[in-house]
Image 1 (cartoon, rainbow, N blue to C red):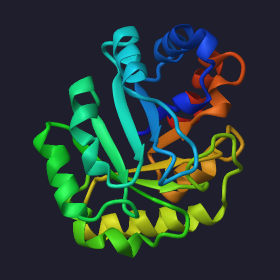
Image 2 (image 1 turned 135 degrees about the vertical axis):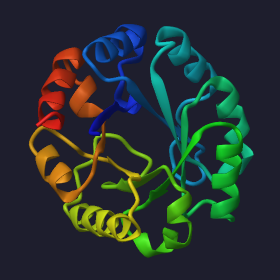
Image 3 (image 1 turned 30 degrees about the horizontal axis):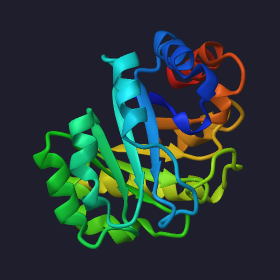
Length: 218
């Protein structure tokens, strides 16, 4: 099933609750929350108060927490207690991929792994059967508003082919620079979970969600 996940990295903090409710009521039931530690990536983003705010504003929405942090297992239980439905961590940041996946599942959450643009899909083949989602980064992580890297399309195709080879229905999420102009290419390559930030929250979030969903429902 194709899913849209608006990224809070681009939300208007002056109208955060209003924007969240707009995208949810327009049909986006999965909210993507980027957590940055200033070490794995240069920026620092949201903390526990924002996660609590999202759950209070949208108690029925699902939350996909993308950990762009070093040694993500340190923070995993904290986000679980705050109501995350899925934890996506970076393969490059985890010492023990299988251990992290198992720890996420033990908390009752789904587990995803993210790959930077230069990280090969082969690096996660040993754990691919344990994953609920694979996040292909189509920009370098850590900054919003970047342009989509077309090379990501080949990586999406490679990931979909590998999943098909194993007979897996694992979701493929793509994050970075996705707009109404390139979303069809991303879907055709094999992705089914689309993260969009600037393209959603820059002017009329509800209308933007409805336009994205037209493509996702084709």
